[in-house]
Structures are given as C-alpha cells and as structure tokens.
Image 1: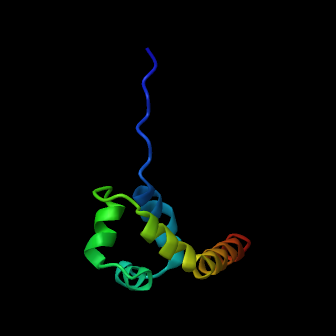
Image 2: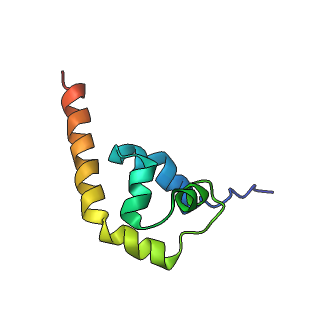
Length: 82
C-alpha cells in the first residue's frame, strides 16, 4: 500500500521559505500583517490556520515581500558569480 504524505501547512511554507527570504524579524512581519507575534508563531507552527483575513492582509503586503525576495535572489546570484 502506498503511504500518503501529509499535506504541508501554509505556515510551514512561510516559516521555511518566505520569512527567511524577507530578512525581517517575525515581530516586524506580525506588525505589518496586523496580528500579534503569538498568532504569527501559532500559524508558523501549524497550530492555527491561515485565515482569509490573514491571507488578505498578506496579499496587501505582497509587493513588499516580492521585492525583498527578488533583492535576495539577485544578491545571491551576484555572490554565486564571484
């Protein structure tokens, strides 16, 4: 019988990929999203779901996140070429 993999919680993606790419503290990200640091922690640990309100607020900041992520990719590519 084939083993099923557990679905990835969106908080895990945020914790592993998005937040490190931003280069901002979790406290600052929570403030930008308008949520408490504890709520962000609970989402990142998979204890709370990503609600539609949180998703909407995150989309509001998406251009900021996207630009920061692009800057990080550019600087990594620059370092790799040295």
